[in-house]
Length: 395
Ligand code: GDD
Ligand code: MG
Image 1 (cartoon, rainbow, N blue to C red):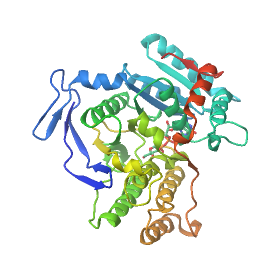
Image 2 (image 1 turned 45 degrees about the vertical axis):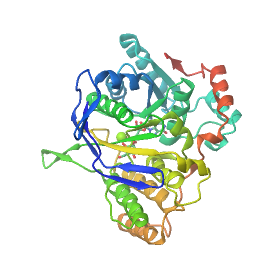
Image 3 (image 1 turned 90 degrees about the horizontal axis):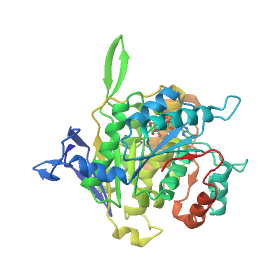
């Protein structure tokens, strides 16, 4: 892969946020890893080395089997795949259909695929035994939601001994785009240190039909709002206006498993924006950190612009509005958020929601950092319940 080095960087405490980096060549062949002025060439074997240590988590809820299979087709073979599904078990057992389709697909490819159901009782027990009860609902099972599925995936990656963790949504129409995201995750880790790097993808474009022609939109509604407010927040602290954040709510992202275990998770679709906020809270040096040693570590957010168009299932306007509210809520309720920005966020909510707008945007559920979970107990619980009743593994 050939990728430009970052042009800009915002430094806040021990967190550095790099500006968007363009990809110049998806596959630059084998050979020497090095920089030629502003372009870094990362040979394929270096990317593969990272992928061998990487798990790709694919969250699934009620997606079409053809789409899920297409996503798996795009994941390069050195990676371990972890599918975390929250699809219904009845009246039609959708999860069983997914499992059968994936097992069949696995026969043809020999791919390393682990499939787990979010509502598996064995999994819930492992969380309870490890003292992480926040994730458990009234039925004694893991709560629903994308973030909740991501937490499960993160711990499965740890259990399988992986060093890196990437996420790709299961409703992507283009296997080639998925392949590219994973290459970019590997490139981000190869260009930066391995332990404290967070790679986030900004899609180059999203194809739409407008007046019977194809139109390649650059920004989705949700990212426009979350990027704008995150940039306002950074501007508030630096005193210099910035537009550096382009991936505030990027669903396609990767980070080291160690870093993933240190961060808080906001429920559902607020998760990505909250990761940004939580990095600022923990490493920005703005508020008293829980762990003062954290400020000695260097954390890098690396934002890469992908080249393939991104096309996924359309889930409707209400869904997008809810996602925007969830993203803005985590910014609003952060102790970092100044009064002025709170007012702007509420103005934004009122403009979008009109009369339905609440006095104050509701907080979303927060899950503490996974450092709170007794990892040894959890992993022992996984060993014991490896079969989780509903899990298949090929690690
Ligand atoms: N395991 C699990 N559990 N997966 C879920 C759940 C759940 O409860 N809910 C949704 N998913 C899966 C979906 O099947 C899909 O693969 C992925 O999570 C993303 O859900 P979508 O409903 O397709 O989200 P989106 O496309 O509107 O939003 C995506 O992009 C945003 C940025 O524009 C998501 O990745 C967002 O998190 C992201 O902020
Ligand atoms: Mg989607």
